[in-house]
Length: 231
Image (cartoon, rainbow, N blue to C red; front, side):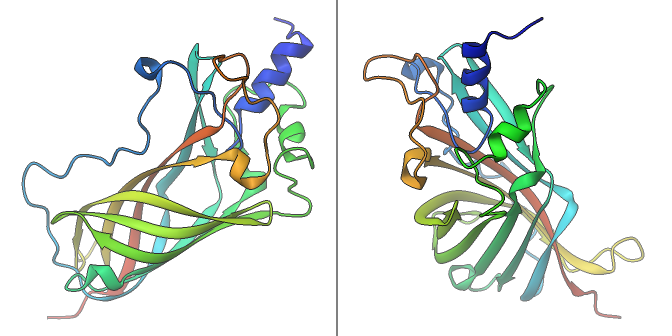
């Protein structure tokens, strides 16, 4: 089916971490809400140390509401992160992540869609090929949950962001299949694209005609840590 230019423009606005509309409250997903804490206790039996992202068991997706009619979901394929953590003092943890902007993965994109989003009007990937997130503070909100405060840099603009994170579990290793410690987290958050200099296509007040100013971020990730100690 041929896309009309206006429809194509609206789709372009909807596809990156750069846009989302704000439909009536009953149709807007609360992407910032953390995943519920485990119903039963999860293991915290993992050692303190440096953990690196297991990219084979991680996902970074985002959601945007298009015209108030649908929630569009896409993500990035290439990203990395390191986490320094001590389970006895999680508030002292330090997280740093990078995202390859050009790895934007779109469901069934029309011809030219990806290239348009990489242009200077959107991600400006030629000048700013990476996004980064660096934590500045960890605040415990429960036995398995925390708020991660940090600085997100997108298109060369740095703004504070808060992620609601949940520890899904961890272990010191699982011989002989997993020779390293492992931990898993889920995190949710929101950003406004206008905070990063992208205001094109935001609906007029009282309207959802366009793609709005809020983007939901959804992260699930496992990290591999220090080697399992021999018994």
